[in-house]
Amino acid sequence: MANIRVLIIDDSAVIRHVVREILQRDEDITIVGEAEDPLVARDLIKQLNPDVLTLDVEMPKMDGITFLANLMRLRPMPVVMLSTLTTKGADTTLQALELGAVDFIGKPTEQELLNSQDGFAQTLVDKVKQAVKIDQKNFQLSSAIHQSSDHKTLNFTGCARQNHLIAIGASTGGNDAIKNILLPLPENAPAIVITQHIPKIFSERFAQRLNADCAMQVQEARHGQKIKLGNAYIAPGDMHLKVVEKSGNLFCLLEDSALVNRHKPSVDVLFESLLPIAGNVQAVLLTGMGRDGAQGMLSLKNSGARTLIQDESSSLVWGMPGAASKLNAQLLDLPLNKMAKNLLKFASLDRTQMKGALND
Image 1 (spheres, rainbow, N blue to C red):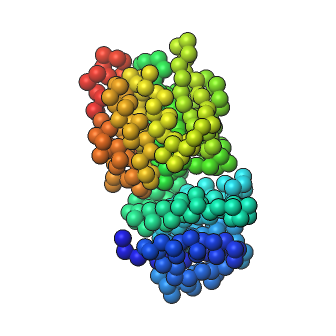
Image 2: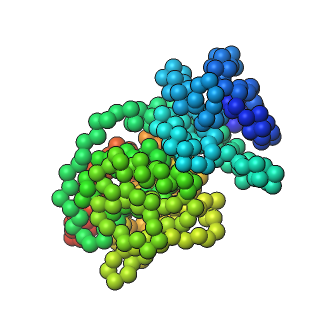
Image 3: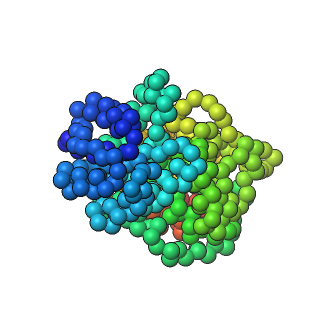
């Protein structure tokens, strides 16, 4: 890998030091500079021409959101946000992702700094390395999605089969991709369960923001909650989401167990819980780093589910979908802008019609 030039922007000298110490230990990364506020950063970007920025959400003189909006308008480049894990921090970070930030990571607390940085360190390095690989065209297209209010609601005659379920897994770039699918869906759309790699505070606010924009009812999943048509359920950021069938109905099951594929929630956990009802499932893997969900998708395909992945050309990061593709776990590759319509079309088919349409 070519050397990655990183500029650190944070008003905290402690955080700048921590980020510098972590990143400069990696032989593929060079810290070209540091800035304590966006005004200094603006000049350093021109002088140093970094490949990636790490950017604090909340800073003096010019807040991170204003700086990011200007940056994406004048000189789009990969940005990894550092955010406090608070409601305010979550709202600001979600807004930053909508403006075009590639990814985010929660700032370590003082106690975490005193104890161990290992988890934070590896995640930060991974996100910076992934950021520089992102296709610039998809990166700019992703942020443009949120700048357009022209989202036409699709027509849908209704599900032809009881308990038809759409299951979606995503990671890096997934906020935009999930929103792109949910926005055009009507209020009678099939039920949807979603696992997105996102912290607890963020999952709750993400669901609330989607619910305000979508015709469907979007919510953070609750343990024991009955799954209903027209509703989308997002896994809490600190719990695995599973689906269980009881007496002909589907329910959300939350589980506080070990990380799977370094994640909780994990897409593989969600997908594998759907094996008993695979014939009623459309499973979707969207943009994301890593391979979480690939093996679970293969198991679902082998059990009779319809499996779809976001194609490489429209993915911000073709990690999870690419891993599924290597396993031949998908029946269909689709660009993001065709995903919602395709999912509805298949959901409207009865059991006789669907047999010949799995790959369409």
